[in-house]
Picture (spheres, helix red, strand yellow):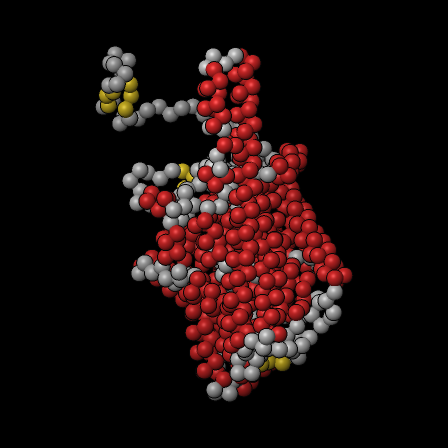
Length: 618
């Protein structure tokens, strides 16, 4: 009877709670020992449902525009950003004007920096590093590092100087400091050419062009964030030569330490996948091992970020180097079977996570734009925005063209030196064997020596950057979510955070919609080669003779091979020969199977007939 009485009492309590709440099932609050609803739970459920619907709408609309309507004007990132801004302004009109400010200021229209840096950005950076082709990454190492490290620093300094000069000349707000303009320069120097990369991938542009832009953008984000954190420490303090030296040392320590953390995480991931691999021929055991390996690979996306942030380093740099190491050391340990190849499965999982995170980032960016429009009436400067756009374009050009010229000059000198050495060795060999052709022929050969040709008339090397690619590099410097997120953490010592945040929003919108929409016309005008397919060794496969893109290669020659890796990287490759056997488990040799007998409809050779004749077995 006691148990029945307790059940009856519980049912009566539930009925009373249902009477108090006219609809739905009541929730029992264990903390307060009461039945009822939570407004926060309803808001969270509404937010998640609305956000999922917006993701589906964004992806569907971008696919329809790109594949059904063949629209190349708006890349996918621009479409997602547009959907987010439209939804954000609708939410603002529907909720703010009706007095429901609590929901408007909640999670749907907010931009959480912790969620961005720790949750959404690692999958994008990890897959970007994972997709870097090692041959092209090492072959274009000096070019990528030059544009990403030296170029980012030069661009940040030029933007800071231009804005400070505009302020001194009364062309921009007068109360901004040089430390703030340098911090803003580092913020906007972090390029995010997601829409350009998407167009490059779809059109299969020349691999040199692709990896120059792709590699620079991946490493540029990491360098820009580290520079931003370094310059932010000096806002509100005196900026002296001693502090500048400390800033350089801080940058070197953070970058190198983060790279070491990423390499350690990659090695640990490779060892874990090696231990989880089994040589059992049972499909069930292989499937279980493969599942555990994929879970470990997904955990390796966020582990470098958390570990680096825990020791106050850069999680983005650690994730980038971890992805490069995982591709080289961990991927060969994936469990494959006779029916399933694990490498395409892993690539599909990482690609899906990165694409979903990228979509959420731009949707978040669009949704949070209306929230910042409330501050534009008081904390926005048209003059600062104008000079910021000019400074970004000038800063981009100030490092792309000079660095490209110096890189091409150095490569031509190395090529000329190698050809001269080989030519001299050939002459020495002929002298030792005797020269029956005489001195006149020797002078003719000397006239054909590489030293006799002017430097600008010598043939281009594999790593040289032609002028058309230099123009495209300058054009591809879009700004995106990384700059927007850094603007939210801009140092507010002089109450200028909102001013620089609204300026960053305009920069992002202009670069996304103007530069992103003009990517295809600029590619066509510059004659950048397209429809390039990479072979297994990384070299581009020549297109068929009737390809319509051959006429475009007169202005920008197609890459014919993979550039050679520089000497320091070749030394690291020698060190890798000792680490690779420790981290990678060799696959067992394939089991020899009996060759299948030909079927009745197969063509077989008749020994009684000539070799060029065959018959069908009926």
